[in-house]
Amino acid sequence: MIQIENLTKRFDDYVALDGVNLSVEPGSVYGLVGPNGSGKTTLIKCLCGVYITDGGSIKIYNECVYDNPELKKRIAYIPDDLYFPATFTPRDMAQFYSTMYPSFSWERYAELGKLFQLDEKKRIARFSKGMQKQVAFWVSMSSMPDVIILDEPVDGLDPVMRKKVWSVILEEVEARGVTVLISSHNLRELEDVCDHVGILHKGEMLLQKALSDMKSDTFKLQLAFDGEFPEELKEKLSILNHTVSGRVHLLILRGTSEEILETVNAFCPLLADLIPLTLEEVFIYELGGKGYDFKNILA
Image 1 (cartoon, rainbow, N blue to C red):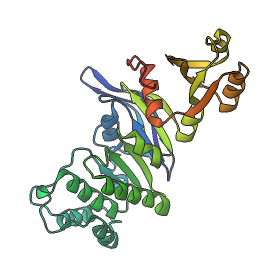
Image 2 (image 1 turned 30 degrees about the horizontal axis):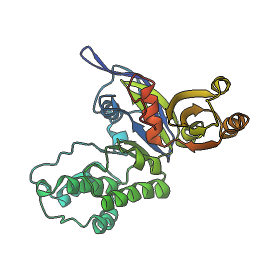
Image 3 (image 1 turned 120 degrees about the vertical axis):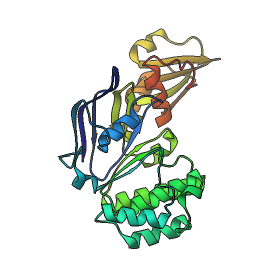
Image 4 (image 1 turned 180 degrees about the vertical axis):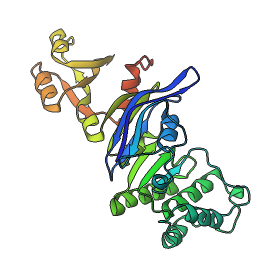
């Protein structure tokens, strides 16, 4: 389990993280999302023990992470900006990782080598960005970690390789109960793999829910009436956003689907189409409520 409580991190006078709470259950996939500058990478570096925190606590399997080399042997971290020694090949990196991770598996290394199909004797510096990202996954997954922390994991990969990498990640979760935390701007892909999602905004956790719950209590509703929109209906619904295109009213609202449709149908609409929001739409709406100008973006 990953447990973060009241995490605070400052850089001089700038507060990068302000009282962040986050919980990830064992064997689950947690998606951390937020706009640029929200503090995602800072949180991840605190979680990996790269940064020392200014307040709060970070524990993985009930152990503090910072200055805990034994715990870090169970954690694989793939950052957005990769670094490899200039002369190293994938084989050199594997050898290096095998000295740090007692659970490193050369059998797994050979299996993943068939998947990535990279020349293990070629200098990594000569690889493309996408190929370097594959090397990072190759050696990290071969380390057989219990916790995987990923910052923009598939950035730079082609569509086919993206699917292969996601398959490898989910295979680790399914086969070994690995716990995964992923930070990414690709919300469509996160929607396919995550169990829980947290939205970080200006160093604070704006929303944290199971993905199924997040999408089951907020909806997009298309309405049309033979006449004006009933003012009484506005009082009966928990409307978060209301836009109009011709005769069709688009509402973003909270509530259960049964309650919403029962309330709306009492006013005999010509059209009543209730659609669950995507993760991307939830993200956009929640940020819109925090001062971002997203007028009509959900139309």
